[in-house]
Image (cartoon, rainbow, N blue to C red; front, side, top):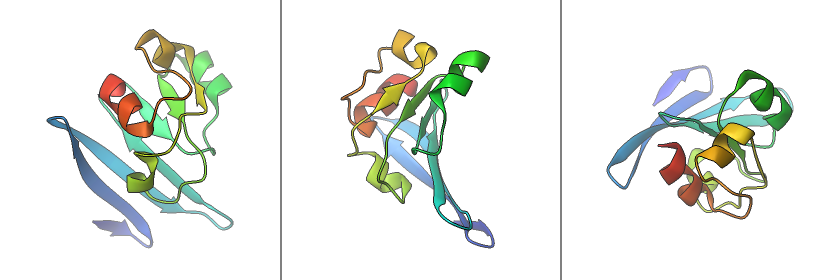
Length: 101
């Protein structure tokens, strides 16, 4: 669903859970993330150090341009809060979302 000029949100179903996938075009890149109940799966634009500072559960993947691509991408970094939920570097985005859902 297009929200406004180039901003898209899509509902993603995974193991009976519903997530919001967002794609927001920027001047030189695209911001992509999927929001779960307990945390966020974000593109490389997201910063784990900031997530740690504010206590946000965050898993970061890179090389993606859509929320759907994030599901098969490898998690590169996780915040402390995400690690406490069981998210680990090397998980797929799908595996991370199961823990962030």
